[in-house]
Image 1 (cartoon, rainbow, N blue to C red):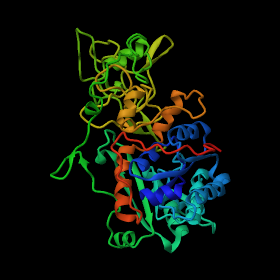
Image 2: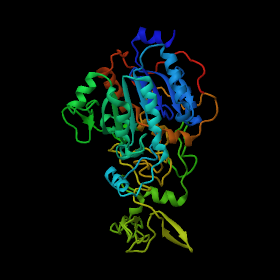
Image 3: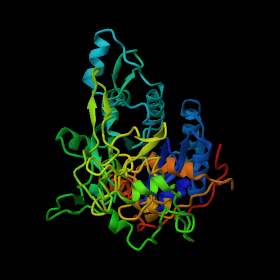
Image 4: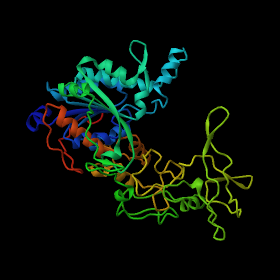
Length: 460
């Protein structure tokens, strides 16, 4: 059965994915009843993960600037005259600006042109694909800084990225964007993302004109109400997971796939094992049984004479009362311990009664931001990261389609640069139900996967 027949028979909306990463966001599309036709990803190892998990889709591997016509042609061929329903795009965020747009534009007006990251221009290639295929809905996902990022428009002017996108899409589309805290959609992780939606339907235009959100109501909250449940905590998400300990190799692994953690050396274990939940090792207090002084000055940062925020260098490494070495991150210098450079978020333990902090590509490193297990002396395992990122809700295989080994580094990068699919599924399901003329099939339960016949070639 061809794709056109499938859509006509099953009423299944169709979509394509740009900057697909490892396909984590695409899981949400599929779970919401959208059939993925084509996915594009720059990096080959990630493209292979998409191909393994989406055998029904054609994966175009390579630079979107060079592959955009191929993406358009493949999509049109698969649609066979039908209309495309959804384009989902997640441009790279590494070049997004943390500075306010007003400050950047002021620099442009003064003739001090800011440095514009060329990766931010990639969004214009996505817009070309959108304008060629004319989908009913367009969804962009990125870090909140996307709203303040400047790019060079085709006329040479420097303007806000989303303003340029809106102008390039033209009068056919209306849309809006807003920052979403994904813990508010039942994800056991605090992860904020900017969700931008453009649509062609009159219902989208009406909602935008009235200033209404295009996104579903939040289902969870830190302070719940009659209509919202409490945030899902780390303890709830990791309930029943086998304990591990990073003291030695025998206690740092298990028979569960991906449930293994790096062993910490004696010094790091000393720091970590004395770090309370919600606190960082830089603030650890005296553990000398004869002293136990708990009022040693804590760590922090301050602005230097140039206005640059730097971590303090006068934080004590020895107890001010008894002189014992504090369990704070340190290095040896001339035979003496010296406080390690770093901020209080390093070597910091999560709180079990809160959602996790945003998982990053450094989630397996104790020195990274808030990555210590809430109670156990170790970092999170990848198995636990799959739960906190909600990938474990879905049928997803951490393998490459070509059979080559997939590194843990690549897995961490895919997680750190993707969006939790549980929350995104709710967004896509809401958008499909309200703003698509194609009737979506009933979304499978969390964990369900619709496998369609494999179409060659998988990866180009």
